[in-house]
Image (cartoon, rainbow over all chains, first blue to last red; front, top):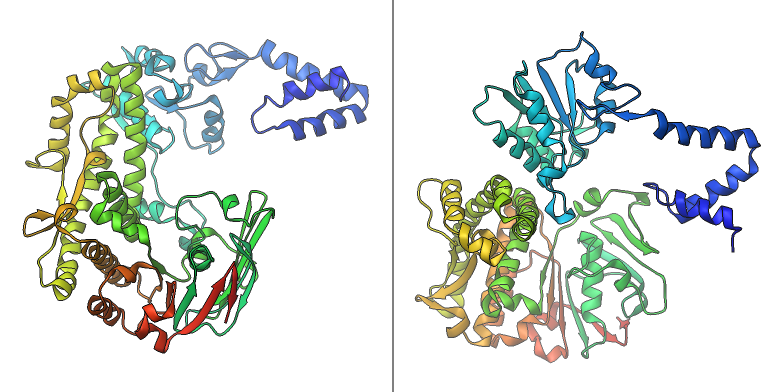
Length: 197
Length: 350
């Protein structure tokens, strides 16, 4: 039986995604083995994470300011919105340095099997944002699954008749891998959506 | 020779089996429950890295053990599959390989007792049988089937929670559903082309695989599907599930416009399932090349001697085969050319 405090730590940490009870135990023992300063800065980091971070009221990004730096940056292209499932996806796309437009975080995908309906996502706020704006294109960066595709199609349906270009990310072979390692269906998609060279 | 040696450890009821010099034709003789089918399944796993039916890998381990191992020399490659505590290891020539690489090595085809469902089972059984065959011949079919069923599950769930929004799922449902219907139509034609001569040769009767879609197709499949969904809208809300689409399609085997489930004898039903598997064999060789190993489990005994010989003639000498029977006198032609193994309580005696 673990001491009460350690037990509490383990239960809480094992709620984090990707961390089970065993890993949580190891983390607990590791923190105990470290100087007190480490534990203090770790708990500060967790405390201020929630204290200082806000959700951007425009795009749903995690940010210290509201609206976030991406929404207030006037150098960014105000005519394109990239729709993503989670705020984490913004950072993946930003890391490419190629996209210069705006973002919108949905907070998931439509999935009645998990009890998630359109009203549970930030779809209404996306439609409002587009209303009367200069948006010319929406890029859907949702997952290429039944649910991700359906969510994109649903939003497309909601915007029917508005003169906006709607695209989704290309599907096919990952760059930098040999053809032989691409799965059958990925390869099939790649042949379908082949490009002129 | 595809399979030359095989070693099986702690698999189902086989504790330890090691066989060298596997022949082109092999006959396994043993009582019910002695382990003949398990031996065939071991060969199947070595080629496909999955069991006959959808059971979990932990169910394949021998009672009171916690791992199993199957290794064999196939086409001069050393293939090995091991499983312990939720972990599966696939190796070719001692190197760990992906599922895709492991299974691209040697093809295998089973003739199992339950194949008779295609002629006698429920509509779900028959659809399942055809789906399984087409999925392994056509990877796009498999993908469309998965996407269709996911969209269907979500749509049915939507119908329970908020039926007025069920239309959200229509586009995915129609897209993949139409693909399935299109492919079922084409494949039915191909299967009919090859099943007719085979069955006629056996019974001098015309036979036809009939594909019955749930709605009438006018113009495009997708349009007709969309229109039908529109028509069944009210009914759906009331019944809380999707009323039309490929998940309700039906396959029937007809002879002179009569349904096999009613006209065919047990032997004829068996013959229909064997003929279908032979069509599958023909098409699979056309698509993938290379002769599969044939695992023929007990299915020949329901045929009369004359038709049994005709079936064996069709297979000819082109394949490595594994037959099972409870006594060797039952399959005299095979016995003459086969290496015979006696199976007793999970032991195999050469």
